[in-house]
Amino acid sequence: MLDFLKNIVNEGTTVLVSRIIFVLALTFVFYLFFYYAKKRNLQLYTYIVVGVIVVLFALTFLIGAGELRIYVYVALILLSVLGLMLFISDINRHIFRLSLKRKFFRENLADHYGSEDLSKSVGEIVKSCLRLSKTDTGALIVIADHMSDEILDSGIKINSEITAELIETLFFPKTPLHDGAVIITANRVASAGCYLPLTQAQNLPREFGTRHRAAIGVAAAFPDCTAIVVSEETGIISAMHDGKIKRYLDSRQLQDILDCAMGLADESAEERLWGEKEQ
Amino acid sequence: MKKKKGMTASQRIAHFFKHYFVLLLLALGCSVLTVLLIAFCA
Image 1 (tube, one colour):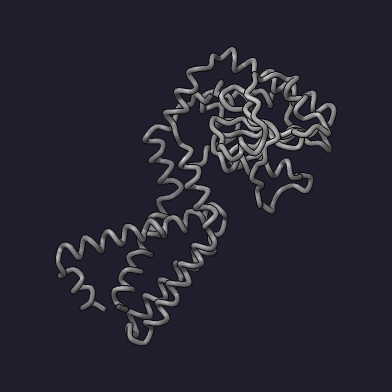
Image 2 (cartoon, helix red, strand yellow):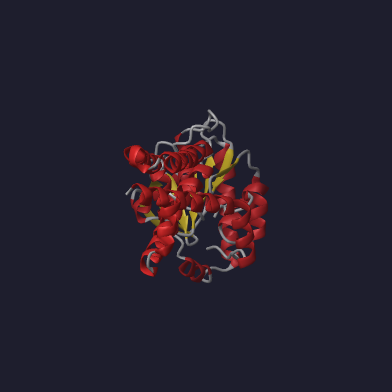
């Protein structure tokens, strides 16, 4: 093994550089695995991977590669398949989220709206949510800087000014659009009756139904979106943002959340409200 | 709609070291061992 290590150092620069690039690429893959394991609270997999590699390396060092070759290859292939199977959905979601970070476009969009217009819209949404809560009418409102066309097209395009009356009408029971989500983008009611991705999380309160699951799902998928849910059963108003949930909201709290969602508050206010932002 | 200020560069670096530096070291260690293992077995 030591001779082998000496040979590696003595080989040409090109070989050394290509090996370093390979190590860096592999480091990235391992990093992704450990990162997602940490995020999903599955550190056990990190210990298993590190343990297997260290044990294989120690055995190869002690016994020699000849006997162990086949076991080393099988173990490495199994580890790769395990990593891919466990975290493929996280990797997909992360790539999707990265593709949404069109920062410059969003900042230009913000210049089109005055604070007064945005405040008025926040007031209208708060008013509608409180009325819907009083009458135990279920509602799901998503406020986003940018929403995927698939979600917008799954409902009916509205493209209207935000008014409490419109929102209440859209969620009026037994009307065709009441069961989906209302999407608000660019200070307009963009679409209604939209279908959202449901979260598969298991550790949610029992009283969370499909509407809440859809809100958590969309808030996890779109980093800058905030979902407001009015429960049909209890009238409780909840908000979801970036995987975090706030429940039992009163009008003041709801207004603060909507101020953040509509860009009326700065980032420190958002951090006070939701905690540190996920990277 | 958002009018947010991003994290400063130093905040980002501090955040990275606080949360992910150990993971990066671990990943680097594993990848070096794996490459040595593959090369030694080949």
